[in-house]
Image 1 (tube, rainbow, N blue to C red):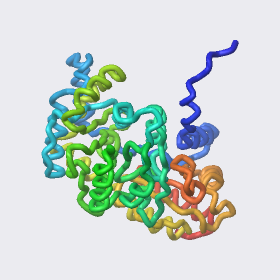
Image 2 (cartoon, rainbow, N blue to C red):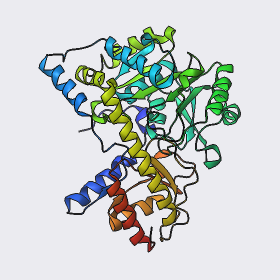
Image 3 (tube, rainbow, N blue to C red):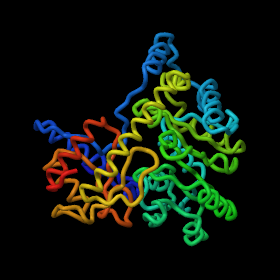
Length: 394
């Protein structure tokens, strides 16, 4: 049987190598191997009891039907209060659009802002799905090599240099996956000014902003109502599988995003939304803050440990739960080839990491990504196992 031809855009979307590495690790586990997972960006913490109970109460009460496409009014207002309390900024709840995860938020943003063949600038390395969201909207992602000197982030000078007649805007993440690095506030301000002067859009993914460690995070919303931000309940709020996020958009665009949300998603999960209301209770926020401090403790252990093992960490991550490590000088035959090295570490040490192949084309074999979103004791074991493989005492 000959099947119909698939859409051409499918060819522009590469496999998600993180998921491929997960499958390989799962096969080893099925064969009886003990694998320490430091690959996927998923907190080992799950939703706190108050959130779970709020979900159960919603189900018991029959609150499982469609909500407004923009999300529950009570949740949008709770998010607005969170911006006021956590960031000292007033964001009108009418500008907040609750979505089926940050992925749906980014897809809505690209659908609304990107026309066919429009170029969207983003750093290389970056979260792989970002460029695929642009491609799905028939746009052209333009990856700009951004190394340690730029904190693996775009700079205003780079945006000026690479802006072309076809450039429509920029897609950023601060803190970033895979690097855990943030854009310095002054640099972000300069960057937004450059984009604004050219009539472009700025979309900033802030899903890891709650997991900032070295300074109080500054949301890009402070730079003007024309900046679009994306956030999520997955990372700081530990609700990955609940698939709930949000956008903040200019007031003039709300109706357009609502129309798109109605047609593409109808609405986010009702149960997840009722559950998320409990995230903003003072006792629950205390739990999230304690967990943030635990992530910082893990970071403060893993960075010097990696350096002792021979990895380079040219920029210490200030947020999220990732380290983007340079493997050029590690004491192993696969040095300088992150794909071969991560496979060796998986099979010979039982530790699952991710090669840089997912995150761009500038230096994908030089770097690998490690997630410290797993228990501290597991991280210690992983370091010991890699040290044994390398013949190095960490």
